[in-house]
Image (cartoon, rainbow over all chains, first blue to last red; front, top):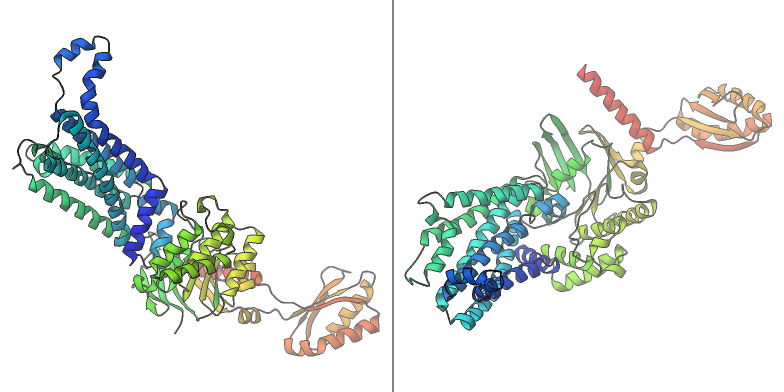
Length: 252
Length: 325
């Protein structure tokens, strides 16, 4: 009962505070414009002084460029959105006092944390579906149809990649007493994940490999990165459980 | 069954004993005023009883449920923090509806309860306005409304009126007064006049320890000063002095002295309050007639709650110092 009530409030909050709108604009714009940018980049370079010389060094854009643009833009802006929209999720409520007002009611603390995650996951999913459909349509229009199943898997992997950072930042937001502290802890978590990815042999187990898997499917349909998927899902679950345990021990 | 019961409830933060072995019983249906200076442990007590913090030692029950079972307690209480914070994007209707959903009310119940509480809080006209633009008084009334959604058995109010102007205070205190008999109200405050106005039982806390707990009337009786005040019209001071000397001659009068030499106000301290209550009015009238004193006022001296509060807190501090020495 309290799960749906809390989830409803979280979704309403995303809508009424325009966070969903911001998320939608950023992800959908980059989803739609990535193939367009790939196509128009050579034309834009031609307008730059001495652009013709540069143009001669760059091969004509292909469907691969469109897919790479789509993946790079959405992974970067998705990560930024995941961080910015999540860092205040719990910390701000504790800081302002709304958490006390709600948690003194029959709203278990794990539900309080979990519904924040689920609401963000649903919002990212909705935006990624539109961004994915739009990106696919423009790629098809400008370069020809990419492999549909690979495109779907890439979009799902991008979504899961964002959710890892939502979960990490949500844990940071639960640990911290203020938004600023949450931002600091969240950045720390993201930097650690980035640093681990650069350790030889470790990267294939980390969330970044999910995107590489999605990309590889366009050339090798048998490609997979199951360990990275398992680690990513495990990381999400671990962060949520840790956030619950941390919040359960906190005095408000 | 007591509405609230605590046994040796203690909360320690590092070297600070925020609450020191609080043992307290609050009877159902009463408006309990939890009185104490700033930092006495009032908010800590409420945080422990509402499950927002855990006691270091001791046990407590709210509406028959032990506070360790926070889920069961949460379903039966209402809580208004000192400075209630709301989601600024919500409207009062959104908030009360959301709280109703958390308590599992049906959509029909939520609609009727929301309407009822908005009327009670005087917020019907602004039910669809965003809370972000509300004044302090409006937020406080909304805070009280959201605390009442589930018709709580026990309602915790932490300094509900301390930051309000006189008009706002009056409104909130009237709302609290109307809850008498419907819910048990546990109200913390450091404003004595508010307690005198609405509370029927009082607990005084200082330095984390309960100094006294009693019905307000008992407390006032217990600390009644056995004295009367007389005041005469100006111009009859000399005769008034003679009247006071005559009263001193009565065996149950300890002293009868003017506040200042030749003053118009005097205090008559008696040895036996009951005899004095019966005999003194007649004696005063008789002596006033005999000496030609025009009396303006005759009054039993009743201590204010403020007098009692200061006396008890000072006694508690003196005792602590003695123990420390």
